[in-house]
Length: 176
Image (cartoon, rainbow, N blue to C red; front, side, top):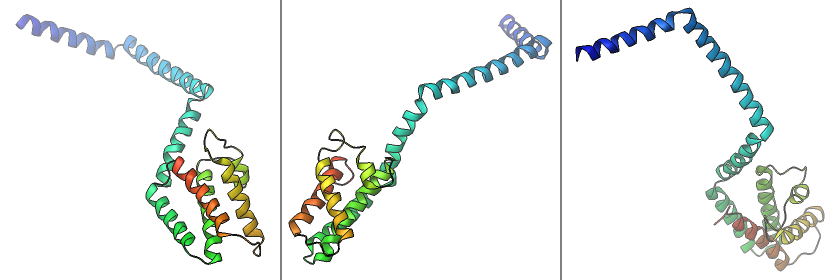
């Protein structure tokens, strides 16, 4: 047992002395430079392969669900549904406008480019939202309502527009 302890003590002394020698210092310095060099190469590789870009898109989706929790969206949607349940024309118009605004806010949070909702909608297709054509019709109807306060509108038209937004929000799993 004493022999094992003395061998281990000798090895510890040799390792300690190696770290204190010039050769040990030079190896440590070489190790630091190699680490820095390969670190820079990894960063360049990540940028070239666009791993960070893909990660940011994934993180953006996660942040979207945390920025717009279902509880908040469900609450907003209940407010829109309440307006739709009223029989006065002002509430009906407001329900469609608010549904459009809510959907546009989600498109912005998804970081779809464009200055207007129409610009952002151009980046979507049926593979992402199955009723994209209905969304377009609802958005056009909303634009008519906003720009022409005297435009005659039926309850059925407004309900169809709001239901289009509801179907899309359910499909995207933003509301229950």
